[in-house]
Image (cartoon, rainbow, N blue to C red; front, side, top):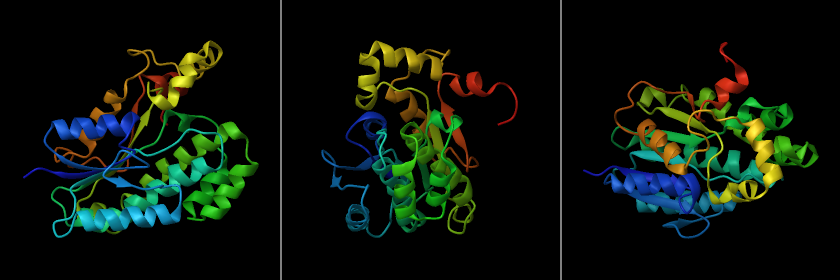
Length: 255
């Protein structure tokens, strides 16, 4: 029987590459995005998340779902980034956990970022982990703009470690992991590549000695394995898919 999979952010970038890969492997994929998806919803709002969860529950009665891959996110230097990246992702994964619990070999994974290695605004991270969306968004409005996106992704990475052993996850046989892409060639990063000055900054900030910048398919392949039945014992991990950037930035010592 084909695996039943939900992919958020399925209309473009890593989400689209993941949905395409899983469909090519025979999985039944339900995409979630603002447009061009089976379920259209704005995960940056509570109402959008509620509507998405209701639609997904209606689309998957009975047997539930076998995997969830949360790719939806934005890289803008504004407070809405926190709402979409952190709260949109965690609300969907938490809300879909009961459907996963009814699935076969259930798995879940989300997209973090290599930027978790950079400076984070700990007040944003703390508010996210406290589940206080209003406080997190308000703090993001006061924070240095370049720290908003990394902080939203850093909070996600910590949420994975906090949640993976919580009741209803590991004890229910559901691995929960994240990937940390380096710079990926997607529509979201197109402007950076088009600007020579920005590309030079990017080259220095995120060196990727192994094969250079990645296509979204490289990240999709990692997500596909993490959410496959073959992954029986990996949980709570942040897998960097970054051409060696994390090692280049942090060195050989323990993280």
